[in-house]
Length: 325
Length: 307
Image (cartoon, rainbow over all chains, first blue to last red; front, side, top):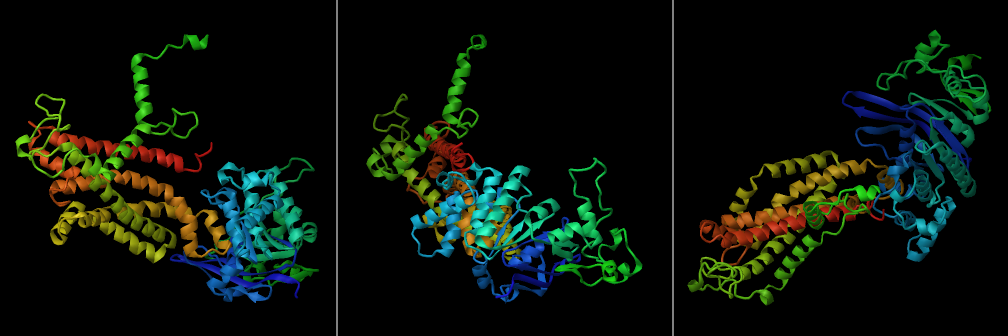
């Protein structure tokens, strides 16, 4: 049994539009180990969510296609599975939580009915009372008070934080090996965010599942993740243990991101920002994609893309400066 | 003191409030936000349904037998009216009340059959087009566009000529008129629904396309469907009446409300009851069904329930 539960190698997912090709995911590789939380960080539109959808093989309609790469779940390439096999894998071995709890639940069914649909798949032939007992247990596991009453309620009768807990309960009811959490706390307010993160952490420890945690918030990364992968314009530019990335970020983009996180200590000075815009994914530069915004840009950055370089133990970065030093 | 200062409602205001409460189930008027039950429309609908179901027991006379001696008698309460014919007689001396009672059968039967066929087809096509999308959506929606360009009445007349008059022809003609509008509205709803995260998460859970359409999309459009059905009951009844009026509906002497209006229209000046009484019946039924539909929509919406 290998150490990695989910391994993504050189994944390319592009949108083929009439105006051209949008290279939204363009050579992404990362490894998610058993029982760890890997953060996938980057600004809006850098391809984080599309990476997740490519792994699930649920690409949006309208020209998105995965061209090449491998997605190995426990050594088995998901890109070669048939749609029917993928349906078996989803929910059982791979699961997902999305950003907006308001639309994540079907408004016309009670919470119990929605949990039942998820549980029935795993426990075929179980009686209704057994399944409902399990549904109550699932709600209790995500720390919902009075689950016996909640189970008969409709989503609109619950708060956002509670709905997101229910979504979580449904997602883990199949006891997946990998949970993809796509900005699960973005729509929640700050106190509820913290509770939800703690809950996810606890569930992860109990089930031993691995979590791919997608976010744009470095503060959440520090609290949640074991390792972090920083994504920029369709590629992962730096990857390493959270502690190392915070203490010694190698890539200029990572440094700029960390500098732009507001800090409690110190004076209320001007917040650091990153000048400029990311490159258009339809017309990517030949060299490093961050070159146009990088404070330390050199000629070779514009000429060719730097390869992935080992910076330290499990720590890699895509930057010429690192390669030299 | 403030309460004592408030002017008491005038008789006029009170009368209006009573009528509003009876006829128009207003959401504002009720403190629980769920509309109050529209008892008057329900009673009217129930009466007409009972009339249709038990027509042979309820009708005082035969709806078909002619008594030419008693032709064009006014309703019983008018001068010259006979107790034998409560709502008067038509030009052939047939009892209008009995014809009204039997006529309810045709109107309701056509409404149920046409809405089941036309509405059901429209619902399925709408869900398929909206959810599957792409080329399927394009083809189905162009079919809908084509259906809208059809002159429905003309088409019904054509059907009546080629297939012969009868219940089947009437139901097919009206279904063809209905399905397209159902499909278009339902598709619009599904387009919005399929973007919602619960559909994506159902896929994550491993649900198949068919299962998502049936167990996640369908229940979400049922409210809209029910409202469409109730709104279209009126359309169907009027279409049936129009076609019968034009002679493309149920052949005489079977009584239908539209046919009765048609037969009475030439004598509206001297024997108004022959056309007006079935006309009132159509109006009452359509209005009641629409008011009931409004209330049903509010009841069925889970967001308004239990608040």
